[in-house]
Image 1 (cartoon, rainbow, N blue to C red):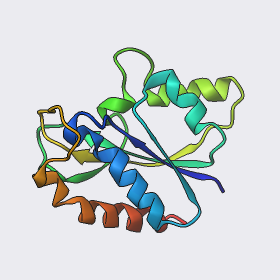
Image 2: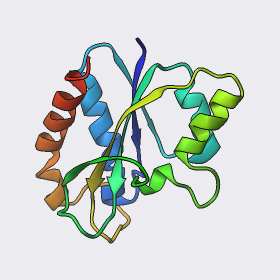
Image 3: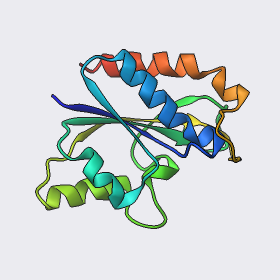
Image 4: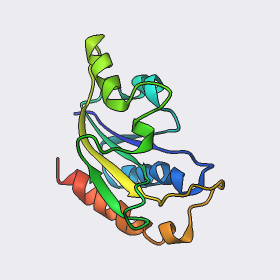
Amino acid sequence: MRVLILGMGNPILSDDGVGLLIAKEVGRRIEGVEVVTTTSVGLNLLDLVVGYDKIFLIDALTTGEKIIGELVKLKGGKTTSHLFSSHGINFFELLQIGKEFGYRMPEVGEIYGIEIGGEVSFGEELSLELREKIPYIIESIVDDITSTF
């Protein structure tokens, strides 16, 4: 089974890049998975996900209702901002379009959102508040993904 861990985010918007960092580290700890990190949204994701059996997504989340660094497993209509683009189709529409064109599209195993608060600032470093929670987030995601195999 081909499993993809897809980390999404923007590395120059400080905490918004957390999905990229977390995905790489999770991939180092789980044997047999592939990791892709991207700043892309919409149709640009199609080539990245075609051919996988299962996909796990990791991205920043801004609800304003949770504690910075809180890990949230997203279901249904709740997702991260990168999965819903105001400039194109959302991630779930992308999967459907891929299927309609005959591509082998992955099952979504889980979507992990990491709360980053309401404000995003320019910078290449994560905030201290978020950095302190990185080890816990990584372990939680690794444990969750490996429990599905």
